Length: 386
Ligand SMILES: [Zn+2]
Image (cartoon, rainbow, N blue to C red; front, side):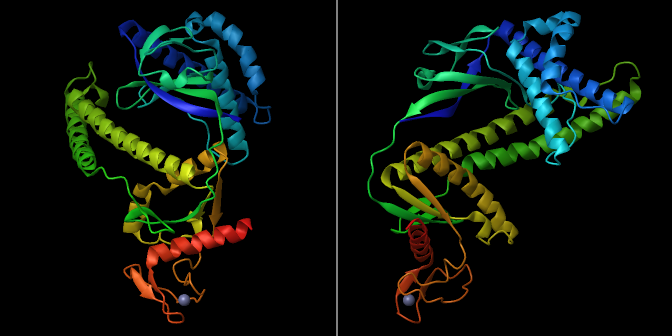
């Protein structure tokens, strides 16, 4: 039994008063971020040699800041600490050349969020009690009841919906051993094929993808129309200026587009969850190729398909699930896995992707290209683990 931190995301259904409150809290976090950032910039302008005000000092500054701006007191105090922590982190990344200069945040940005570390409690099947907000309606809380909530993030996304993401400390038990191993060859037309010849299809959302594309096109067209209309209006009306966000038709297309995209992403994630859980249940050792050495990215069309195939997400899920459930994920080099004969080890040379089957010149074994690769991957993994 191990203790792990799981991320759980629930939909929030705030009432009207709570929506106002949430926007105030998004605003407060943004206010503190922008205020601290402006201060850091000014300090640097005045004296480039001055030391960066660290997280601890910024937290100390919160007290006078709250006095000056009493509206900050309605926030969960821990969320303001999180802001300072993130800003200090952004500066650390800047100094260590891992990130650019931290930017000011805008209330116009598509995603608004704040993170706190106070206690959230489950009140009922579809209710949570949140710091400062109180009782709020949610989607099903069933998965939360036996976990300890460490951290929460409330967000308003480009879909126009509200969510809460919770980091929950949970105990997991290792799954029973099966003494089975499997090699997986990741592909483009199928997500993967295993060393037993089983194919795992890519997630298919053709209809949704078509809708998302349609709304993407509408979104671009309406954005253009709104831009033209805005310029015309502002040219003739010197006093009441319009902004792009004032054009409702465009805003609606933006939201609909975002909803289709979110739906596709969610369904793909569910699909990958089911698949990876099934694999981890069934096998003690799972061997996959290192994607960096899998040389398919040169072709633009393929690269797009690869992104869709969600290899990265698939691998990440396998990684942590193997870890949680006492199984083993082995990552091997993908070099020559499709060239070598899995029966005799003869290297049959390069073959174009269009060739799906081949016969080994040395031992005459007839191979399905992908299954042969998966078998080679499994062999390599077992060799590495001894
Ligand atoms: Zn052979």
